[in-house]
Each structure stands twice: as structure tokens, then as C-alpha cells.
Length: 137
Image 1: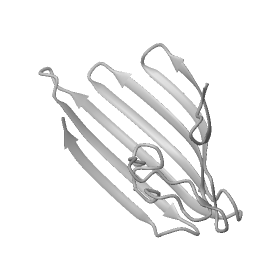
Image 2 (image 1 turned 180 degrees about the vertical axis):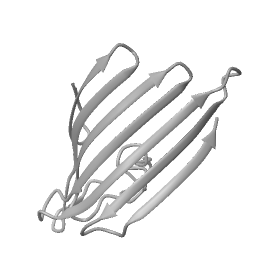
Image 3 (image 1 turned 30 degrees about the vertical axis):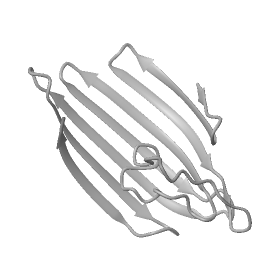
């Protein structure tokens, strides 16, 4: 279990050996039209609040992110899937949901190849967005 001091969050997970991990978590970035919102202008939120990058800045009513993730590894292959349910911190608004998928392969010469996809379904925030990324490191 993990808790964060810089924002409100809670995460719990379970692993089966080193090959499979499941997690569930809830994170809140505070916000209200009267009081302002929690912002991190020098941070990258791509890794935390969905890979479609809809929440690179905290909405005026804040952001509540409930997420479920599954991660697995087998030999040179890796997989990660994360499902996000986004809502406002105040005002009881449904922002939408997002499914993030990552598949990786590490070559015998240790080069990583990755396929990353994000599928955001908008409700009351922004617009539907799909992103596909290919990369190597």
C-alpha cells in the first residue's frame, strides 16, 4: 500500500512472483472554482493521469482518478494495462474514462521496443482522443 503526501492518493496491489502485478488506486488533485486547483507546472503528468494527456493541467474543479492496472512480464516481453475513471474533485462531474495499453520487447542486445496506446472517452471534459505511440530506447 502506498500513500502520498503531496496530494491525496491511495494504492494497493498484489503480485504473483515477478511476472504479474495487479493494482487498484485512487488519486485526488484538489480543486474548486473559488479556491483554485492543485498544479504542478514542472511535472510530467503523462505517466500518472492517462497517456492521452488530457490532464496535463488540473481542471478548475480538480481531478479524482480511480484506476485499475495489470502488469505482466514474460522473458523479453512486457505488458501493462491501466483503466482510469476520471471525475471532478468538486461539483460531482464525470470527466470520462481512459484505457492505456503498453507492450514492450527487449532485444538480445538490450534495446527496448515499445507500443503504447491511449483511448480516452470524454463525458464532461475535453473530447474523445485516441493516441498510438511507437518508440525505442
